[in-house]
Length: 185
Image (spheres, rainbow, N blue to C red):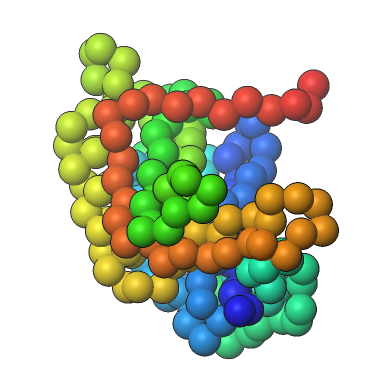
C-alpha cells in the first residue's frame, strides 16, 4: 500500500537543521493537522526554532520503502518558536507514538524528538515541567485524533518486501529529558 512521506524540516540556530518524518495513508492530507500541531508547540520553543511543513513530497511503498511517485495538494506552512532567551541546545523531550501493530513479537512504536527547548521548560530537578507535559500531550492527542498518522516499520532486510505501516492510536510525552547527538564535527 502506498503512503505519503511528510518530512517536516527544522532549523534550530546553532546546531543546524533536522527533520521529523511523518507518514500518512496515501489518500490523507495531514499537512493542515501537522501545521496546527507545530503552531501549538510555538510557546514551548525558542525563537531559534523554525518548522517547515511541506505541501508536497514522496509517495513510498510500505512493503519495500521504495519511492513510487510524488504527492502534492498539501498546505505548506512555516512556524517559529516564540520564547526569547536561553535554550538548551539539542535537549528537550520526545513524543512516543503507539500503534496496535506487532511485528516479530514487538509492538510497533515511533518517536518524534522535540529539541531544543528553552531553559524555562525544565524543572529544578532537570526534567520537563508538568505544565509543559500536560499542554504538549493535549496537542499530541489532537494530532492522533485526526486519524492520519502512520508508523512505518522498515523491511527487516535490505531490499526486503516485508515492511508495513500501522495507524497511530495514541501518543504521549513522558517526564523524561532527551538529547540529540550529531556525528558531525
